[in-house]
Amino acid sequence: MTGLYISRVFNVSSVWLVVFFCPIMAAQTHTANVELQLRASEMVNGVPELISFVFVNRGRYEVRVPPVSRCVGRYSGTLILHFTFLPAPPEGVGGGCAGGLDHNPPILDQVKSWRRLGAGESFTATYKRTELFVSQQAPGDYDFWGEYQAPGLSAEEMNALEHAAITFLREPLTSPHLRFKRPR
Image (cartoon, rainbow, N blue to C red; front, side, top):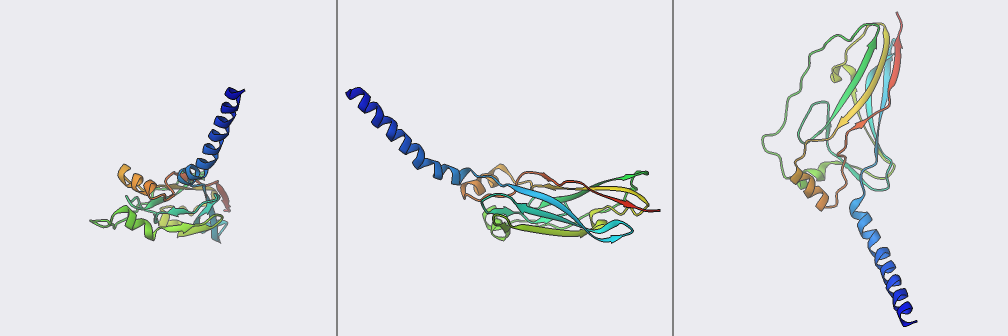
């Protein structure tokens, strides 16, 4: 009976350890649960002139969102508007971006200015279609969807953010499609 009693004490002790450490581990391992939505406004002949990228925090924890841009940048998330046009293929449009700093502050200093999204909160970035390099105006069917690409942080920068227990948007996101028809 003594062996059985010790076994029960050992099992109870191990349960206490698991219960005791679970909240600590959960606080350190949560990930961002953010949804990307695309919204259209200022309709002209059935097609939007303004496109909004909406980030919605569906999780229980605060998430930091790096600065967003329609340009590729090492320290900003990139917003891309994809589209297909029928019956004719889209015409190419030139465009570009410029800017950036020669010397960026350490990542833990940069993150202080990143947008904070609490549980259930959202953040919207709005652009004209032409600013997103989509200027097709012809009659036809339009299919738009948005994409977010996370900044190109180094492994050291990502480790520093994780070590500081900062949850941040680091995974690519894709929105559902929006479809429109421009009449003839």
